[in-house]
Image (cartoon, rainbow, N blue to C red; front, side, top):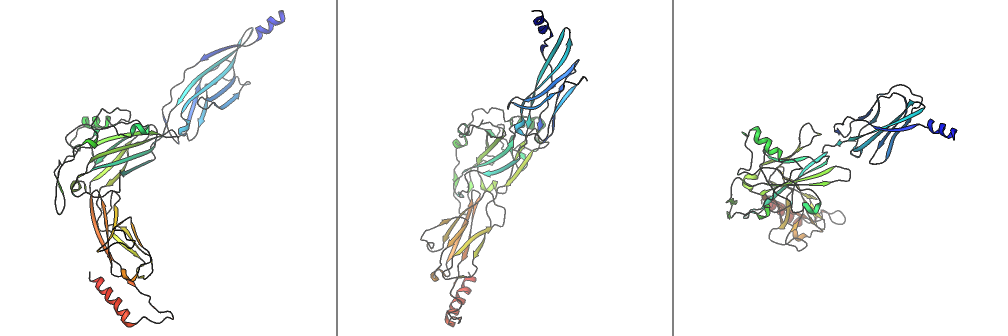
Length: 423
């Protein structure tokens, strides 16, 4: 019994003591982070353990029994942190303290929360529901979609026109609930579509404050319910009977990604006025706490002008497959045009009245198509333009044994070429 009492008295007494930890500021992806476990021992340091709570992963497990030096911190360095490093970390340390008649094991632990931010790595703007035709005598709604990828937390997204922040009417996009994103809104109500250059700082802060992705948007009418104004039919170009200050509707959705980032899609919708909106410069800007200045991308709304056509081969012969391709325009066009091909005065080779696409293919052209004319119509919601090209079909240059074609045949093709060039 005496020996048992002595053994029990000599067993170490375990005491658990929490200690305070300084909060860590957020860090940006790619930085090197050092976590410090601050303390001071009055005995022999026994062990230090660094532990990631979310993945149950031990970073270090160090036995330091011989050490008698007072240690103030044992750091853990994480080089080039990633989004996946975000989360809680624990530091455990234990030391032996002499306490007659035995020893006392003092255990202390503390938790760090590491917040890893990631700036958006990609931003793009596209027009929704395009390519689409030009509507000469009926107004139509137009939507720009700005997509920001790779951000954590979700960035704030807003639009500008010609360098000025757009005043918008927030609304909830119909597909937001289906996509699982949190729909938000940004902007302020107002009669004018654009914030003036003389806007003071108070108005600017008010407008930007409503761009917070965590903000909730009040119930607002959808642009689908906007009354489409009447139009005046014009032989040259429509003159819209509508205000020069359109209403801009704004919504955005947040889609969490598997890597921990958030994909943000912002939509700007208004009733398009081709006369006023042609050559308008729209920019999408993204603000994020990991960025020193906003990211932005710009597009200029423009109707297609002067399509450039390329015919291959340049000297088509009977039986060849001819390709007529749109090579470009005289200007930068946005959004992408809709291309329609027709044959002047007849149907296409396959019997159809028209064909869509950037390229028209005529397979095994017969001699009867010599001199036929083809029209390419390029259009987007801002305007439409036509261009024509004539197909010249040549016969075989030489006979079976290399003899030249009869003079009358050569004369016929030369006359065809001359008449084509005169058109």
